[in-house]
Amino acid sequence: MLAVGGENLIDLVSGSPTGNGLPTYVANPGGAPFNAAMAAGRQGHDVAYMTPISSDALGDLLADRLVESGVTITAPRVSQPTSLAVVSLGAEGVPGYAFHRNGTAERQVTRDQLDSWLPPATNILHVGGLALIDGPDADAWEGCFADCKARGLLTAMDPNVRPVLIPERDPYVARLKRMMQQVDIFKLSDEDLLWLYPDRSLEQALADCRADCGAALFVLTMGPDGAHGFAGAVEMRVPSAPVAQMVDTVGAGDTFMASILAWVIETGRTGRAALEDISSDDLRTVLQRAALAAAINCGRQGCNPPTRAELGIQD
Image 1 (tube, rainbow, N blue to C red):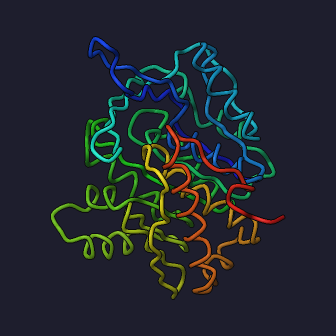
Image 2 (cartoon, rainbow, N blue to C red):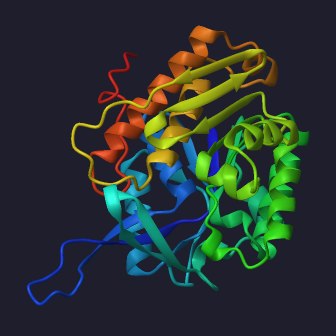
Image 3 (spheres, rainbow, N blue to C red):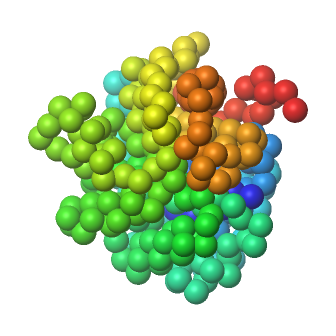
């Protein structure tokens, strides 16, 4: 089973203006780990989402979307409000974000609670996103991550950096680097990479990041320039998959990450040694699958990942 932890929120996504020029917004369930859980569930896997969801009306939207995608919610519903992200789409559908999440439902976690919400059948824990920025909730997620690693579970992380929300850079980067030493599957975007390793070329930033990271499977996504993967001694680059009609990129990276995790489960690579033994053909296969899933998502509004059937995967 894949267990996923991290924020859930509502993306208020800008749409076409009204007749009087005022913007309109569509409410879409979101949050990077939430999206990843949904995407993995749609690919037919047992997924547990272990972050609290609000009992308000927006929380109902979030919970319903997970359940419809086949995801089990293991954390309780709570009375605190749902986090919000106001998403303004710029050129070529690239989103800009403003977040509202102080005291919200998804931050109501403690270390002991996370232990109780982690299903016994879990063999991969995936965390990331806003939940790792700061506060007691970030400490709780880091502790859970370290404990799962010590117990022999596979650990996965996608930092999904949002600089606008990071009050202090140094403690946040230090947390990520501690967790990078304990991660087995690590994915980040080129934008994440250059923010974490500034004032250097992409190539040097990548080399420095890999030196700091203990991942057996390491993937850098580069938007329209494809993806660059590393597993053991194997290295592979794949192009992005074509998008028939670009709508927006919301959730594309989360869908990419979920597709990697789904492939790991399907192929029985839920141990570290199996990840380190991936062949070049295997690495190409998983990256191409993830790129296709992300491209399908980009052709839809908000995060709306493809199902297993839409990816053409045969059982």
